[in-house]
Amino acid sequence: MVSFLERLREIDLPLLADGAMGTMLHAHGVAFSGCFDAVNLSRPALVAEVHRGYIDAGAEVILSNTFGANRYKLAEHGFEDQVVEINRAGIELAQRVVLASFKDVFIGGDVGPLGVRLVPYGRVRRAQAREAFAEQIAAQAEAGADLIVIETLTDLQELLEAVRAARDVCDLPVVASMTFTRDDHTLLGDTPERVVQRLSGAGVDIIGVNCSGGPSQLQRILKRMRSATSEVRFWVKPNAGWPERIGGRIRYPATPGYFADYVWTFHRAGAQVVGGCCGTTPAHIAAMRVALDAGPPNDIHNGEGPIAHQAVGVEVALDQPSRLSQSLAAGRFVFAVEIDPPRGLSTHRLLAGAALLSEAGADVLNVADSPMARMRMSPWAVCALVQKQLSVETTLHFPTRGRNLLRVQGDLLAAYALGVRNLFVVMGDPTAIGDYPDAMDDYDVVPSGLIRLIKQGFNTGVDHAGNPIGQPTAFFVGAALNLTPEDIRREVKVVNRKVEAGVDFFLTQPLYDGHAALSVLDVYAQQYGPLEVPIVVGVLPLYSVRHARFLHNEVPGITIPVALFERLEAAGEEAHREGVRIAVELAEKIREWAHGVYLMPAFNRYDLAAEVIEAARA
Image (tube, rainbow, N blue to C red):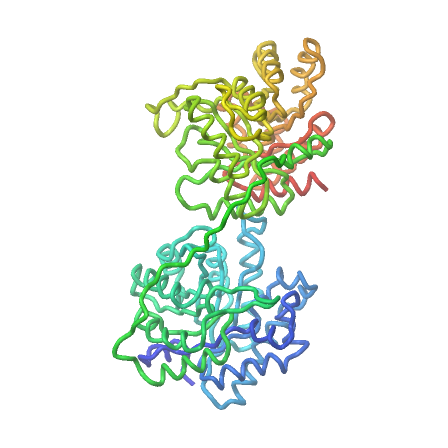
């Protein structure tokens, strides 16, 4: 039997791959909550039956039942010590079925995503990911796989680590296949063209697109991939359309005949291997076999159609109080994390980071507004996206600089209608330091005045001029508090003005000495009585000695004790891990007098912020 790559070079027709394994196993009673890969050991005859069905339908490439057989996903079911056994069983089952069929069928070792996020959107380092992939792929190669198929990955960096792992442990042909969202980008915002560029540079044998939507979307993506390069082979395995839940079951709308219509369309778009993914069955593969054997039609009618976007109505309970206000009122210690809006249109990476922080236990995500006066997406749009897609509450940074009274009030109404309840009122960074130094820098109201406008105006149902706005808002308003000011007396007066205006909570700058900060509170208590407003203290995890020096020397209001520099120096290359430990210690120290921690991840290292939250909560 010739090798897989030799076969591709010999023929003009595309090779036909199999369809979904999970769909078929579920149809035979395997629960979605179970471990599909362990069925190789518990019910091998069932797996063999699925393989046999696809081979009888005409498939020339079948994938082993090992999609989730890596240490991370198997650990969810208690099988993490059986990685090699399950992967070997998957390949050997496929081999026995192929031998019994007396047909020339290639066996692809199936490798899916790890099921965990890589840094900075998760806490698994790239070296750890590569090691997990290598363990799985080595077992498949040793068991006799003809090729390695790395498929359905949403993170391009994770896919590249899987490819490197495959190159490290075997010399088999490698298929690297991404999946895309409805907007034809990966989950982290990479375009088909960028995927091809990076994978071509990694030296994969075949670049693929699978899962995602139905044939129409994958045809469109495949064309974009091929337009980026004609030097590689392509593989395409679409879902049977977008799934829907009917009567407690998952249904896919695309019929076998519809798939047959796309076989030659895919081939003309550059695919040398075609097949099916979620929702496809032996009937789909059989229909594609018939279409391939009949030869190419004279005219191919399938063109590119637009993606169908479902309109989603946003329902907002206008009088609903924020969860942050309820938590602080109940005396719970809260964890807030700052995230920056994207510089362009893509929100994929931001949402991935936000999801990680939510899973780690963040109570609220603070969305900055043009930090350092750099042009970014409007933060109240980001707040709405995060709350809608992830169901995690946000705090909107609301600078007064650059806004007149008309815009201030219009933006407040828009934010409230989109479900934003928490505001952090600040002056904002001067435009002179940012992308547009000549931009208008005027303002009609200072932070204490804006707090008063919201608390005594909007929250009572009227605007600044006393005109009704329909009904009262329920904004929960925060303001800045400097715990290490050069002029303590002046800071205390500013704080009192905010308290008199009705501020609900304070956020502070990053703090590295919890005891030194108490002097401001002591002076305030002497003049006005104890400060009763909740304080959420800023903590910025240090990443390196150089990072600490920059903050200490170039950022006003930040002072880092010598002892922390010494700890970072001693940690060497593991300084970022020491920075996490320092942040956790600070969180513990401030529990005595503060009401929460406001984490500001350096360099968008959301994984480190997540570690701080989990360690501090523990």
